[in-house]
Image 1 (cartoon, rainbow, N blue to C red):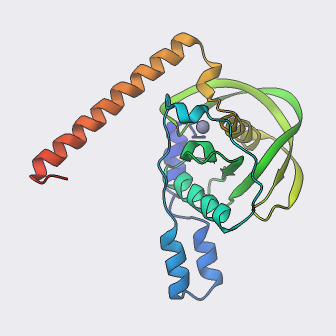
Image 2: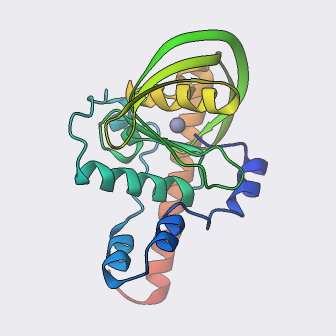
Length: 220
Ligand code: ZN
């Protein structure tokens, strides 16, 4: 999930404060740690109307190093975007896994594995944006408060109540795991306009990239 442009810019100023720095300071920085850090990667975020975003994610059953690697990459990708939440679906990894950080300081990373909403209360209408639908923001109605059961990266189970932007973000990201996007809540006409706008922007980006390659005089 992405905050509205003005707020995204404000939080972008803190994008360099990533949780990995906390890990750095708790160990003496050796080569093995550096190797591990450099192994982290920003993954490509799929964009609407990519059909892979419509995939239903499978439950996580193995809480192993590979899962840890995916979680680290997802945080790296989310902080770099910058976004406040990212579902595994968005990086083409179809597992029931979300990463979220709604803090202004960008240092409160939360992981939700196999999340389930146990209870919903109230209605909140919030302007949402999505890293898979760049530049588009619109109002969506969701539950105001939710109780969620989820696992952490070690597989340990928790049950917690959430409200405010965190509750909205969890619901937005959980939709991704079902192959659903926030634009699905909008009218067909609006969704069609968004699809056309994004396609046009992608073509313009591709054309600009082509120009750059031609100007540089090299063939890649
Ligand atoms: Zn999203």
